[in-house]
Each structure stands twice: as C-alpha cells, then as structure tokens.
Length: 196
Image 1 (cartoon, rainbow, N blue to C red):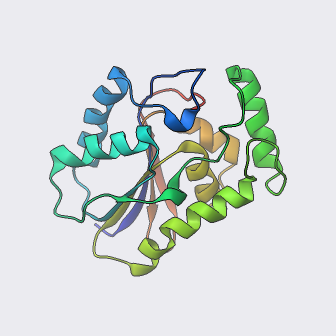
Image 2: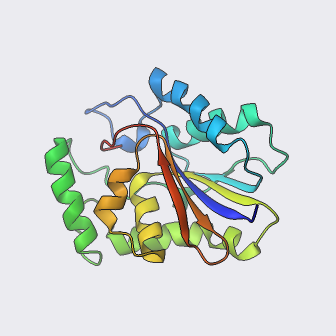
C-alpha cells in the first residue's frame, strides 16, 4: 500500500449555542463513534500524526490513536490545523449557516464569515501540513482537523465542488489522498453534518 494523506474530521461534539464551536468537546455519541473510526483506520501505517488543538479534534485523535498502538511519533498539535476562525459568528440555524458557507466558498478572497477569508484559512492549513507531505515519510500522514479547512485543502487539490464536498464530511469522516500527487481516493463518513 502506498503512502497517503488522511484528513480526518473530528467526531460528534456536544453542541452548545452559548460556547464558541472552537471550545466544544466530544459528547458520548462522539466518543462511541471514535471506536468505529479507529476500526476503519486500523490498517493504515501512519508515520506522522497531527491534530488541531481544538478539544473536539484532539479528543478524536487521542481516542483513535490510543487503542491502535501504532509505532509512530506522538500526536503533533499544530495551531494552524484549527478550523476556519469564526468564533465571532453567533449561533445560526442550519439553513442560515449553509447559506453563509456557500457564500464563503464562492468568495474566497473576501471576509464573508468569521475572522478569516477562505483563502487565508486554506493557506494556513496547507502551511501546517506541507512539511509532512514534502518529507514523504514511509507511511501515511494522518491529520485530525475540521470540515471547512479540510474542504478548502481538498478542493484546492481536486475538482471537487466545495459546498458539496463539505456536506460529505459527517462527524467523524475522513478523506484519503494519494502522496505525492494528492489525488482524492475516497471519502468515508459516519454521521450528518452540523456547524461544528
């Protein structure tokens, strides 16, 4: 099996309209779904494991990595793997959030949602994973992160349409891309999409 870049969207958090999504933690169902995610990733051979510092992503990483006992480095926590910065956005209905996200993807150089443009978030995320991709380690690069920044990266490398790709990423989900050419092999998802 050749090496791959595996981009993992975190598992299901407990939604709290009074707390920024960047601070949400996994709920009981999210922790349970991590067992299923670990089973799906058990055949991989990661040489690099990295995670966003946001609690829901880091918890997902720890719950997936621990039972698999991979012979690999510890989880690298990289600030630039965090979600698109939008803690200043109030709680929105799913319909309102979807409409804002469609506009966000359509106007990547304009600040239409949150504190970052789509282009800024995509550059930040790409900068975080570039060293692992360039190193071409003997094994996979496994990254635990968030739907919007994963979508921005994947759609910059492929012909996928951003909003449609984002909707494929339930919680948890993962996308597998070949290394070094970054062709999308497949996307696997275990639950529905929400604002997290």
